[in-house]
Each structure stands twice: as C-alpha cells, then as structure tokens.
Amino acid sequence: MKSNLKKTEFINWYHSQLDGVLEDGERQEILFRLLEHQGISRIDWAIDKQVEIDKKVWQAYIEDLKKEKPIQYILGYEYFADEKFIVDSNVLIPRPETEELISWIIEEHKNAKILKILEIGTGSGCIAISLKKKLPQAKIIATDISEGALKVARQNAQNLEASIEFIIDDALHSKIAELNFDIMVSNPPYIPIDESDTISQRVKAYEPNLALFTEKKKPLQFYEAILELAQNKLKPNGSLYFEVHEDYAEDVFQLAAKKEKSAEIRKDLYGKARMIKIKEV
Image 1 (cartoon, rainbow, N blue to C red):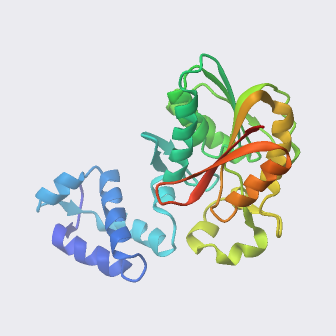
Image 2 (image 1 turned 135 degrees about the vertical axis):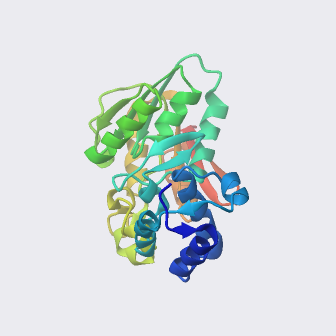
C-alpha cells in the first residue's frame, strides 16, 4: 500500500485526531473496521510492525468521523445476520436488535411448508432478505415509501440472491392489493418529530428522517395504521410482528388489546422490551 506513516506514527496521529470526537472503545473498533476495509486484518495489524498507512486516504475518513458520519455510511455497508448489506443515507443502518426479531419469526415458522410474508418499511431490505435466506419457501413482498430505499433494497436482494418483490407504498395509506399473508412484520418510525432534538446528531443528520419520525405527538401512528391493515391482509391465524421502542411496547400491547387481539412482548438481550407479536384472540 502506498503510504507515508509508519504504524506507530499512524496510531498516535489517528488517536490525536479523534480525541474527544469518539470514545476510546468506539474509536478502536472503527479503526479495525477501516483497516479491514483497506485489506488489513486484525491479525495482520497485530503482528506486522512494518505496515504503513496512506495518510491521504485516512484523512478523508477522519474528516467524515469528525462530522459524526456513521462508520457504516463511510464504508457503504454493514454486516447483519451474517450477510453484508449495502447502506447509504436512503436507509437506516441495520441494528443487532433487529436480528432478534428475525430469529423469533424463524423460530416459529421454520417448519411451515408454505409462507407468505409482507414487510412494511423495508429500508435496506435487511429483514425481508434475512427471512428469505432462512425461510426459502416463503414468498415475500416488501414495501417502502422511499424509491431511494427500494433501490438499495433491490441491490441487496440481487447481491444476496434473495427473490423478493419490492413495491413502493405508503404505510399510512397502503394500496397493497395482495391478501392472505401468514406473517406481517415492520420496524416503523416512532419518534415524534417535535422530539427530534433528543436524537443524536449522528442519527438525525445522516439517517433518513422518513424512517425515524412520526407526526407531532403521534408515536403510535404507524402501529395503528399497520394494525388496521393487518385486519384485512393477515390470514385468520396469521401473526404480526413489530420492532418497538421499549417506551412504547406497552402502548402497542394495549392497541392490540383494544382490537381484541392477543399480544406477546419479548425483551432483547439487554432486557429491553423491543419486540411484540400480535394475533387474533
């Protein structure tokens, strides 16, 4: 690699540039991700004292990190459920807790011979594609209101050889004609727009607001709309799965109860109520 910094010089420079910008653990993890992106594994980095770094390349990374740009958008991809997904500012960055929701669905439906699944608000396609990889017998339709997001999702599906039908659709005013789904799943927006000041700059400035925010003081508006849609789209014994913020899990539970549906809340690995399944009573 064309370079102008020895390893020790680079380490000192890198940490001095990001001191106060990133916490120590995060700074170190980002260092390893960027090194791997440049073709230098953690093992090679640990044992090779002669490795040299091109400062010009890394200066661009540093400037992005100083602007609080997420590492996933700098790299242009994120790993999720053992697969590599393209990400850009059109889509939310896939998060580990969403893998737990996928695992729940797979656990309950892996033995089904036929499955029809609808995902609402697919973003990068990480949920739909991961389900297709683990449940190959499923026919999956995935929707999003953003054409930019669907472009990313289609590319990910092509790269990962997952056959999925992607459709542009507004979750609040859905025009999906298909019926009789066994499963519906969604990780919808739930942050009221008037609470945007509570969100970190790293998220607010780079991740798509369409996928983050609801109308003022309406954190449940997408859950309500999707529950209503499920009335007509789900089979009688079908299941609706949501990813939820822990602050709203009980509220979504009560929405289901009002519609005389049973609901089950599950906690993630950190003990937070982040998933809910809804079925007919």
